[in-house]
Length: 274
Image (cartoon, rainbow, N blue to C red; front, top):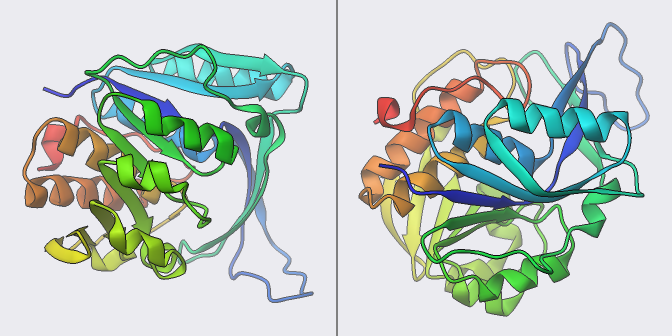
């Protein structure tokens, strides 16, 4: 049985242009197709966790604007409790995304209301897992050192993690590039490193303890894969699954995610991915 999860993080609108190839510096590429979707690493992970079968609430902020109200409704429709998401004066965060025909992407994020996220007055029960990312202020990340339950941090985008959080976290999740950019993670208790289509590995105290491959699929869009992986791995490890079973399920969830457009793909219950 999956335990409850609180996601602390960003909520964005994703504006996605799909084109044959990614543009080079200073280059214009024609023939794109535009989509407008819910996004933000925090919202993506919250929606993924809810679709995987967990009871989920979210801590975050959106603007008191059309996009903000739409993003709140999207979370509620997915089954996420939004009582700790507040409406602010800043506009709702927006991500500008370009995706090529192979599913690779380039992303620019305009944080907006996400820069106002704080944990003042938010309570965290001991039996609840907490999953956060680094698209919110470092002050909010630092405050996570005081949460009592299972704490997972997706250290993306790659920036320095507060030392107290690094020491406190039960799990840190990064991709291979982020792992190289954050050498301090080698000292973390448990780090999951993703390698895209090559799978993922789990490291403890700097030593690899498990590695699994990812299922082979026809990728359409990789934007939501990492967030789906983070949600799945956090839920599985919090539920007490062994390392290999948890990694295997998380890689399968990530592989499923890339076969759908948008950052919040439809997913099945987590135990069906084992």
